[in-house]
Length: 332
Image 1 (cartoon, helix red, strand yellow):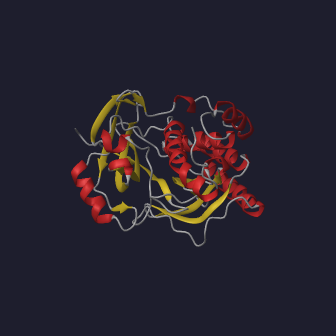
Image 2: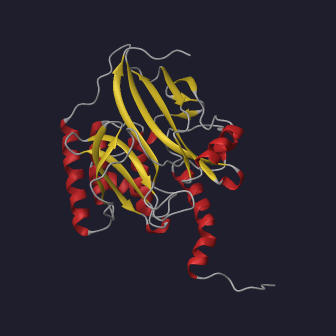
Image 3: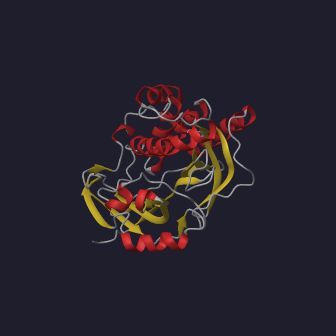
């Protein structure tokens, strides 16, 4: 029997916010299942919550000359122009040439937050890096190296001493570290190269149809399409003709806009382009590109509304991707 009236207005919003957050965390985990950045068994601290990043300092900080501008028609048109320019520059550029005995090194630097403590009352910002070495002969042995650092900041604001002490009690190890090897790009049972890259059309119109038909598992069809392309770009293994077509497809997805005009990831500054997702309480995801070269620099996802841990507009997922050609791989 109900003995008190249900909450309304702000009280109702506060009451269901933890439920929204839990659903969002699970959905983030599901919609990133295509990404190669898998972690396996990561321990009790990270298992309670999906990956989330708050960028607060260092080279992964998102710098912007203005607040996010989302959804206005002029910005959407500008996003299309930027993406078209990036597509044109990508086609004109050259993919890295990996000679016999060499490796394509794809390094992804991330800063991720994991919740911990009773009822996840604290969170810690933890930097980590995943580097993949793809041999010239892709059927040969690949190498993956994972490193993780110590927390650089604790949340919520004002609780740093208590959070740091609790972190010490629970221990570290939120993300696995070490060197792994696998033949043909399959490491720890996971294929680092999405199999569908070879079948994706290079014609932008045909690719738009393909992505629309294959994108699933998100809060909206538009978000699913954006996520599929973003996950593929994040591998650092998309060839230039497909990468160019992907930019043109993003330009056609409804709601695509410039979300930040200047974002710096690992020392490289580009334009953040994404879309606001109304079904996620205003959350929006971004890819960051250099429109002058067509280079894909990384990605970010920002919160829409404030939570107990993070203020509105917080970047809670971020990565910076760089590629180069090397002559050797770490042993281990």
